[in-house]
Image (cartoon, rainbow, N blue to C red):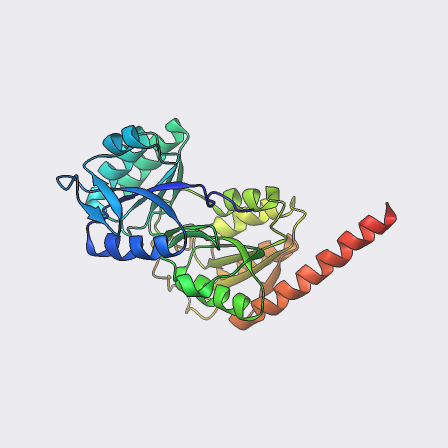
Length: 301
């Protein structure tokens, strides 16, 4: 199975006629994504890679209902696009754009909560369920379908870890990018809960970084999980007082440091990789142990 998206998810692309919108629409279609329309005011009737263009989300939804939308517009336009999508009935909204003004992001999250809409991002690489669907900018070639979920704050690290998993013969169920801005929608805890409930996800890789409390908050939930979690954290060698490039990577009152995150995660039973290339080995070990445990439970019955 997959979390959040699958082969039936109907997708809109807001900002489809821009350079990034056109390029990534083509890549998403190549992954099998079901893109039913693009939104670009004033360009109704045009077509991009076979996808019909509409002036508004409302106009598109009157033709065919969409489940999700992805935003490829400049930061100052994101709030208007997000409100339009949420008000138009979209239930999952992926905001690729980075550096969305803080108060705009806060208003988007408040409106989404009121309308019970799931936001992924801003400043996210999106998400992919290999062989089913992709929403976002993740490279197509590094994935393979399987049973390991990946949830991350960092795009570049995620690509490298997924590439290593694939090369080790370990496929992925869904890979999700939370986003690197100060205010984002989906959290580690939210994604972990979805993976825990997914019967086809056998283990989860958490890709974090210094700054913020996201990983420490996730550790509280992980204590309740039955599935193994493996983590890698960026920023181990960052000099004291140095922050990562993401707006959300801010160390406050002793929380958010590399050491504080490692302590919290290990206390929750998480295997924390010290080096990037250790992740695939730890995942293999966790899957083998989980398989052995399942066989033991089955025999005992």
